[in-house]
Amino acid sequence: MIKYSHGYYSFHTLFRLYGSALYKACFCAAISSALYIFYYYCLYVHENGTKLLAHPYPVAAVIGSVSIALSFKLNFSYNRWWEACTALHNMHAKWLDAGSTMAAFHLQSRIYDSVAPPSLGEHQDVHFDYLRKRENTERTSFITARDTLDSNEMKPTTAKGKLAKILRRKHKEERKHDSVTTQNIHDTSSSGLPFPNDYWTRSKSVKAMGTLSNGEQVQKKDDPTEKPSLFLQETAHLISLLSAVALSTLRYDAEGEEAPLTEFVPGKKWPSNNSDNDEELSQNGYRRNKVMMTVKFLFDVSRSSNEMLEYNAARPFHVIGGISDKEAELLRNARGASAKVALVYFWVNEFITREHMHGSMGTVAPPIISRLMQFTSDGHMWYNSARKMAYVPFPFPHVQLTTAFVLIVIVVAPVLMLAKTHVYLGFALNFFTVAILAGLNEVAKELENPFTNVPNDLPLNLFQAHFNESLITMFAGYHPDSHWEVKENA
Image (cartoon, rainbow, N blue to C red; front, side, top):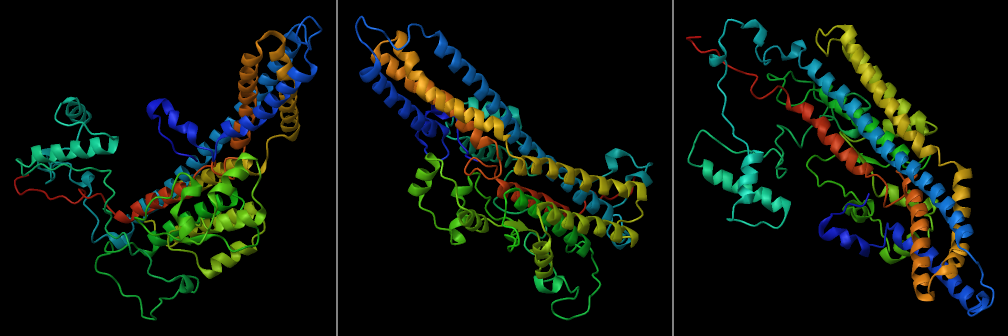
């Protein structure tokens, strides 16, 4: 997916070749313009003789019909692209619901009794004024930002610079008040989670064997919240693995080959929206000639199977906790995209059932636990909705028809322009008319498969990175203000 800005009436977007439907359409328009010149000098009688066409209505009817057919195809192609994007976001939302709810249930289990915060329901006699000792925090509001931007004290050039200057000015104003601080919740310079770099207590090779890597016995921790429990680690791993496998099947990773999955590193730079500009490609040894890549795109030359295999291998999906050899082997042996996802989906449901039976999710009632199964099922349903766009192409009869229509327009549009317009004006109008109609067809072709048409595909690696970062928030434990003290005079 190509990320762009709207500055200067979006004129800067006109200079991009790779990923453009405009310049691909210009190739068809150039052919039609060559035919226009041929018709004018070879078939068109200039003075009082017979013209190619006495009236433009017949050709105008043909071009109008083609416009309707192309608009129909473009509308449905865009619907496929947008429906795929919606399906992926809903899939991640449901699986994140499952992981977050499992973590919330797990924190109510008996192993956290010594550190669990007190229940508000057990202290109904305590007045709210004496309830907590909290640090007051005043965040930058919209009014503050607007007033600062309207002032003449500063003129930042970018939105990021504006926000930074707003926060700096706000910070200076609040230095006078020791009890008030300004916090920017979108500051990603450092991780605010308690343990961002050390989740996994088992290595990839021993994970499948179920033993500690150093051979030592498990020691009971005094504080169970010091590090994420094995339950939270395995929950995050399995759901992250489920998402990674689902996304890898949508972009047609090679059947029977090693799954392009690797270990997730929290806090790492976000993958690029544009897959071909991702730094990870070059870091993994993928070499590409940008000129040849652009030429192939403009002439609609598809990537070969080997090129797609190398390209996808250089963009692995990141999994929390990595992937073990046993997991990779079973996924490799599962035949078909649906089977691979179904395998991990089974692992997740089996894990939920087993841990519930052993009390890892506290005393939550079984009907409530069943909601976890519903969340994973809903996510699986949305995956199959996205899979529909990936594996069911746009209907062949309509593709064939619109392709033939575009060729017809290339041939007959010059006849229409020669009928009633000046030769030079007709040349320009012919070029623009064919470019517009061919451009509609090219846009539809780019959007009809949202997962493989690089660079106009959906940023699956970015979606996976966002999903992983969302999953590890369950490691943060209880709300930071949940532990409160009752004052003596309460």
